[in-house]
Amino acid sequence: MNPRKPYPSDLSDARWALIAPTLQAWRQARLDRRPTGQPAQVDLREVFNAILYVNRTGISWKYLPHDFPSHNTVYFYYAAWRDQGVFAQLNYSLTGLARIKEGRTPEPTACILDTQSIKTSTSVPLTSQGTDAGKKIVGRKRGIVTDTLGLLLAVTVTAANLSDNTIGIRLLDQAKNTWKTISKTWVDAGFKNAVIEHGATLGIDVEVVPRNSETRGFHVVKRRWVVERSLGWIMMHRRLARDYETLPASSEAMIHIAAIDNLAKRITDEATPTWRGTY
Image (cartoon, rainbow, N blue to C red; front, side, top):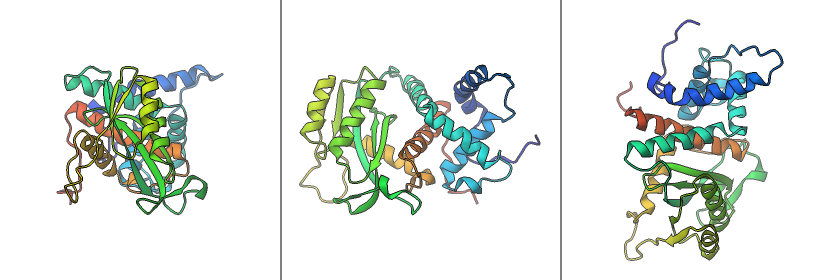
């Protein structure tokens, strides 16, 4: 293969070194199940670069530049990694490394929950959409859990009409299943008694942090600002500026991919490219 001109979203050698072992182990396990044992010819690094390109730019799969592997090939790997939990596995293993780099233990003990309602594209099935009556948004709702550094610990995507309580219970279950050490979480007033009571059954102290009713407009809310900043981080990936995915599982995968991209740069001390000064 002739070397191509790199795109800003491409993995550096240092970031690829963080991701490669997981993808290569996945490929080897797949080869071991093949009767022929013949290795695939696709370059996994180029496949992951193509996925990052879609995630960062927001294009449709069919619009992938021709110097990447074909969009059918890239989507095949994307769907396999989505369905087999590879993106989530990468996200959580890199989270542990990023925490160690910051002088923390790899396993968090505290976290923050929040939700974000997002508009959907016309291609999203009506059966997986809903209306957030409070925010007047027709679409889906993202629920995320972060640690106190803002690193993603759990994610779920649902129809926007689902209550924060229902989503909060799902998030607590998911976070506790992945991170056994979690014992404390902060939430906003949208998460009511059901979440607090469910947290108690899991050994998690759920504390509601309300807004300051005396302050009008935007203001920083103790603890909760961290997760709100994380939602801002993922929105820099244009595929996440609106929900374009047919399946909620794909929406969750795209959030994991954005987190992987940010985490790898954080661990290797590489700056996040922006549109400023690129033209």
